[in-house]
Length: 595
Image (tube, rainbow, N blue to C red):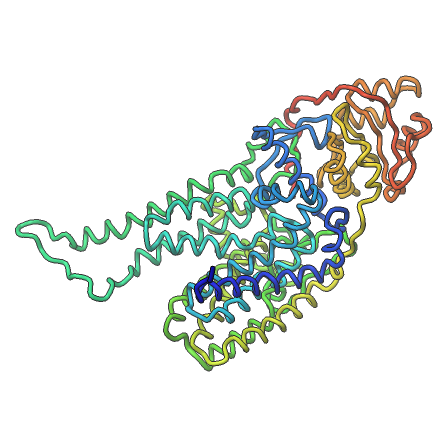
């Protein structure tokens, strides 16, 4: 069977975009690709995402769609928010072959290459640029500094930068024909379940499209019949009727998008966790303070242009680079001076300019900042358009991490470049040259992350022996404000042993929780194992690498347990089989802090 030439070219185009992107991320995380089932990268978010993927697969396989769980933060029952579900669902078919960690690692490695491919199709569609040029520009988007830094911290929900170009592709299709509205609904719904931050940008993009669509309607197709008056009746194409028709379709499109994005509202709604302890830190109302905290929640003009974001001090620390890339910005300036968009490139130029300017304004948040401080005139802060949005009730303040919207600006930047390169001789050669320089500059800007440290999961053999459902795992040291990241490893271990765990991704146990009472005020050595079993604990586990963080109370607690059952990379006490006793949701104890 022979494929048509066009199909073969499309497959080659897709293979190049995916292969080049995968080569870059695999090199930056080397040798993770050789040990997918057993290695993990040391990062602020990656380990907890492995547990989330595992939990989603298990709950859906059992026919459930729970909104609460006691499997993390045990014995408290905690509220679960919908985030990162599309990559989690895609990982499900990979689990039988690769296990929970291997499946999550594959999704991590493929997220940016797939985003590059989607962006390449979008750029080609909007500018008419050739396949090779669009592949290079798509890779420049998917492998930009902002996306690379998100890959470095392994925050899977926000490495799904395909959401922006996929939404714009679907919006264009729905603009042309109503039959594409289901596609637009599906893409918007996928964004809603995957990245609530990116989802918040979509109504703004759609609103800008609707304004443009009403103000500047498409010209009729060449050769279309001219409107004719019907005898004695209102002309079928009167200004009033044309206006109503012009308004009807954008209103329908906006209604479809609003319905699809409803699940994202639950991420930002303060009532979503009222009366429950959150399984993950819920969104919070952001207050832009001076000086800015680390990592800063807003993009600064100096960082966007020159990449001046501060570096992390350790692998477990969040590191957000919000940098458009000096190479692409310089290329855009030069091309804009010597060439105007021609032919099909014209239709993407205004769109690209709007995305670039709008994305920058969104990413800079409600007030202008420079370096580590807010810019002031006298004592007054300089308000930006986002401040007006928030005063009108738009919930960007509840998420607070404005810098994430830089991906919108990056999409506009590569689209503008595509518009200027369309129809130009040797455009592909120039685009691939820019790509190499841009990726090199992005790696430089995110340099403290690379090579990303990784290791085999400690105590992997012991974790397999812990599998079962007759009791939970108590992980020490307990998390506190100064060591909240310790729970990441505990959640990764839970994906292997399959038992409820006391660990949490970034949250901390309530000061008056059952767990803290057991550890900080234990009964005598004879009563302690019985007391732990009564509360549903089968094992007590301490990773050797984290034993230095034990405090005096925790060391006293361990002394009452006697000789451990296993003492290797993991020190394990076996308390015997028991029955799990989750506690019901506790009212009024949710901590509304940033995730």
